[in-house]
Length: 171
Image (cartoon, rainbow, N blue to C red):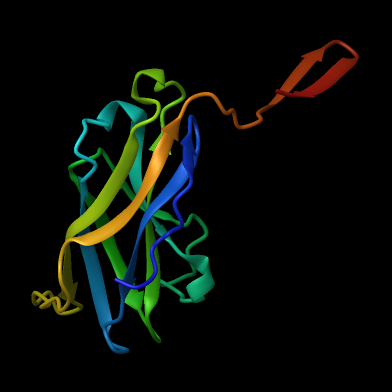
């Protein structure tokens, strides 16, 4: 499973990393089909998540598919469901790292103080010819607990235009 993200605060409206996944098909072309993410916090924290996303970690420097991913989010879904990756072909020259992150809701004050923990419970992959690929490793890949915090705010930039009076404000 490798190194997992550091524990921190999951604030409203943020994209927060919960678990890392490394895929290494040893230089062969493989399709990553799905990643199953589960809540392992012991509490129902689904109300704090807008969605869960799978992000290509750009630090791995891998080119995926025909062209490099410009949008690093390659799959999204709800907490507890599989993140279905639409035929993500990895022409891997080496290991490729992915991040499972939570897109937090704009308001989850009723869940504040709970430590949310997401695990990767399974993945699905197949070879380029369509044959199912066996996965080595153990599941679940335990993610990091992040404390839900509704009292901190991420700054937002607002643009207001009225006639010739154009204003930008950071709130």
